[in-house]
Amino acid sequence: MSKPHILLVDDETAITDNLAPFLGRAGFEVSTAANGEEALAKIATENPDLIVSDVLMPKIDGRELLRTLRRVDNWIPVILLTQVGEAFERAMALEEGADDYINKPFEPHELVARIRAVLRRAKPGKPPLSAAWSLTCADLAFDRRARRAYLGGEELTLTPKALVLLEYLMTHPDELVSRERLLDVVWGWDYPVGSRAVDTRVAELRRALGDDAAHPRYIETMPGQGYRFAADVEGR
Image 1: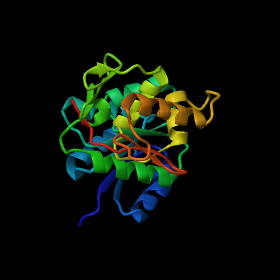
Image 2: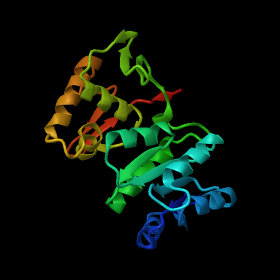
Image 3: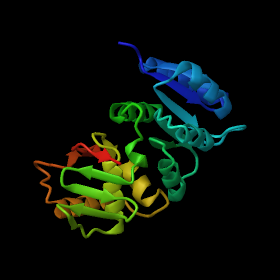
């Protein structure tokens, strides 16, 4: 079985010189590019399975690289590396077709976990769930334009934070998501809340969904680690 081919795009040689060998040891075939322009040339000849790209780069940056690919319906999975933590920046990247993002600085093991999760859920030639405007899972539906969720056709009454939490879990199905990551996504690290806030919002979701924590249909607790959306999700 061939190794997944990762294209690592970053203008900082300190990043590529250290991260490329690490990804190689993790079981990936790795090639590198110093900017988006060089990356586009390599994508045309190498056809990688996934792209890990920095955002801030000369010539063509990571966001423009992503937009260029998506404009021609190239849906190679893309994970963006960013130092920008604002929620609207992350939301824009996902709406433009990024499969995931990870904030710098990051742990290499976390990046490997994200790469494997994205490769598992990626469907060749199809947009990622993060770019879908409608998410469905059996009788659960999420309208991302209207910012509303429905169960069996009935609208769910959820707090704004619980709604964002449900959206993130549904766009990352079958992926273990730590409480720390959910804190970053839903509240932002500068917001003065602890991990119990995540548990409180998960409990709210379970009540609304009629989900049993002991026998979950939707949200599974991974003791000491975080949560996982356990059901299949379709996007359009």
